[in-house]
Length: 260
Image 1 (cartoon, rainbow, N blue to C red):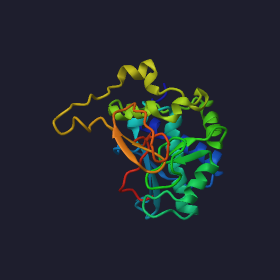
Image 2 (image 1 turned 120 degrees about the vertical axis):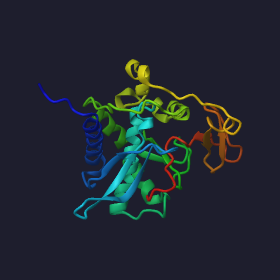
Image 3 (image 1 turned 180 degrees about the vertical axis):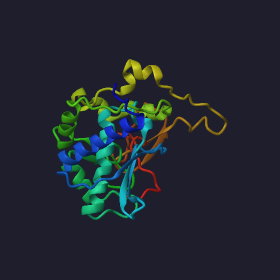
Image 4 (image 1 turned 45 degrees about the horizontal axis):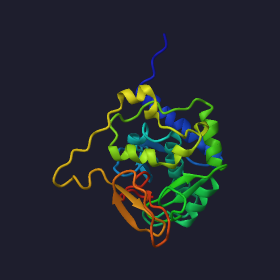
């Protein structure tokens, strides 16, 4: 009787398989190895930190962190976008010229487009292409979606997920561009829509208090010209200055303290 794989081994084997696949498909196998971690940082799906870890022999390696709170409640293609987004930062750290601090510069944006992801400050068409807090969306017919389709044909999945996502995380998943993509690339639905996952998922209710009633369940929306609005999930807003549609920015914002 074979030994059952542990949750830790299974989880990280799946993440490593995805990293190796996109490294070959989008970066020609040129990216060095890194340490993939799970971090439940607020308001971010993931981040990259250059040379964050060292071993006892003095070797260092980069960190790519992914937030498991999103795994069950966003389409799989969105989680893969986060991974590839952070891989672009890793590529730039080794082969390019990163922007200062957390700034996503033109070189990074060019690389993202080249691999099939369009940088966008709102995560939707019309957003700014560079800036401190950046999301992205998949380019139809681009290399990223083709690589995703190949990965999905291998029955790839992320088996483990956080059972207690915050309500705003669930709402952001429903608003994501990945919901409009085909199931063939991991889009169109979330794992939480499956019966087994839905049965075990516990969405924590928002408990209103005198100080939190007006902000605990609010999302941040941004337009192309950089105006910000906070409001309840599901709002449809248009900026009168630039005439672009406001999009949710909470979904893929990166935390302030991480070195990019």
